[in-house]
Image 1 (cartoon, helix red, strand yellow):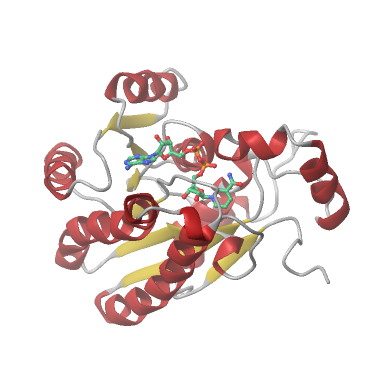
Image 2 (image 1 turned 45 degrees about the vertical axis):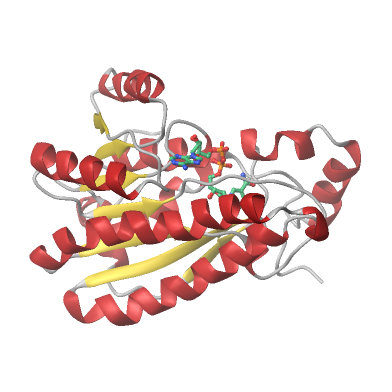
Length: 266
Ligand SMILES: NC(=O)c1ccc[n+]([C@@H]2O[C@H](COP(=O)([O-])OP(=O)(O)OC[C@H]3O[C@@H](n4cnc5c(N)ncnc54)[C@H](O)[C@@H]3O)[C@@H](O)[C@H]2O)c1
């Protein structure tokens, strides 16, 4: 608190949300929402493993965290490449000993009318979001099963249930990801592993750059989002810490919408 006083019971509070000693692999965490979540998890005490395809950029990001006395390392791989994932997960477990938290966040977008998608374009979107989450989770789960403990968090989207035009492949993949959250929660829960999802609304990242530059879309955001603004990349981190910490121990199979109220609005 600003006046130098501490919150009564603050040590219990901090214990409940602390990620001290935990290792968190966050895919697609070189920028945007992934970076925001990884940074906040590191601030909560986790050793975060940054992932993406540009190893040099990830190393610079990890250095940025270490310069703040936070714990971070890098596992560069493409989430659609099963061999590279296996190597990256193996190297992470050798280096860190275990992986406690997996955040499947890597994603891409391709806005175009449904009938103009080529099969390759369709597969690229679904392959990154859905197959990517399958492949990375499949590689990590055996290590969680061995310890009878783990937290898996899928970054879905409100597009999994509410959609504007020209994002059919993306919406299909995110809807499927929500189903995967529930299926994994049921299958892995008995083994001490939870699986939950976060469904973000519209956040200001590179992903939504063209929408941010569109005056009509900005009007839509200010008129239709009850909080009247874009989400900020750092606003997902606290949810990840909740779902990954002992505070969220009994949350399983849930999709947490973080959208400023957009889905709730009539
Ligand atoms: N920004 C939003 O408004 C919004 C809304 C809902 C959901 N999401 C979801 O959040 C996630 C992150 O989005 P963002 O806004 O930070 O986007 P972003 O484009 O800023 O970041 C995406 C990251 O994923 C990485 N990535 C993409 N393909 C990859 C691959 N094959 N292997 C490894 N890394 C890969 C990119 O390099 C990048 O670092 C995505 O899954 C996206 O669908 C974003």
